[in-house]
Amino acid sequence: KPLLHGTCLLPRSWPIKQKTISGSAFISPMQAYQDSVSTEFNQAMHDLSDITSITKICSGRKIDLPHVAGIYAFWWIGNRETLLNSNRSIVLKGPGGKGVTVRYENWWPKYLKFPCLYVGKTTNIRRRFSLHLKRGCPGQLHKPERENRKVAPNTTSCQLRWGIEHIFPDEKHPLKIIESSVGFSYRTDFGENAVAERFFQEDLLIGTWRPWFNIDSER
Image (cartoon, one colour):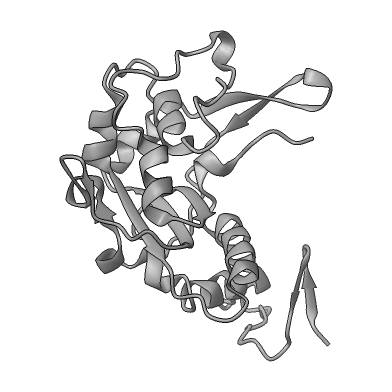
């Protein structure tokens, strides 16, 4: 029978050591779950060799990415302390329009080389990447709201740009931060039943990598 941990059913065949009276180290069911995820399909997205800086992807108006479907992730590859010293609180609109305060924490799995900022899926990697950055729009797209409330994104597909502008509200040139401190990775190798696989794997990566800018209001 599987072990029940939170809402995850974990097979007993997984290598989980039980804690003894002597206090020897053990692997919790959730840690075993995260470790298994890190060594399977998503390893192709979080390895150093698979994360590319924005400046290497963009050359003038050219974007060196394919026009194909896939899942993708944005990473903070700059100084971690700069990220953790940013504006990490946001007030989202909760049920009944009431404000709900959320704080972005240093909660990423230890096996990740860089903090994950956003995970998504798309039918066109290149087009969605461009929409996230909106490189043709210099300066701030999202003016800070009073009381740290969430500003409505300029579009439904610019979560990365919106997120960077929220956590660095005083930065007049947010594209410079994105170009110097953000990386990108993706995968497109989905075979049979690809639409369903991308749907489930996006959800799995969000729950495992805990990206800041994927958090949104509850309804």
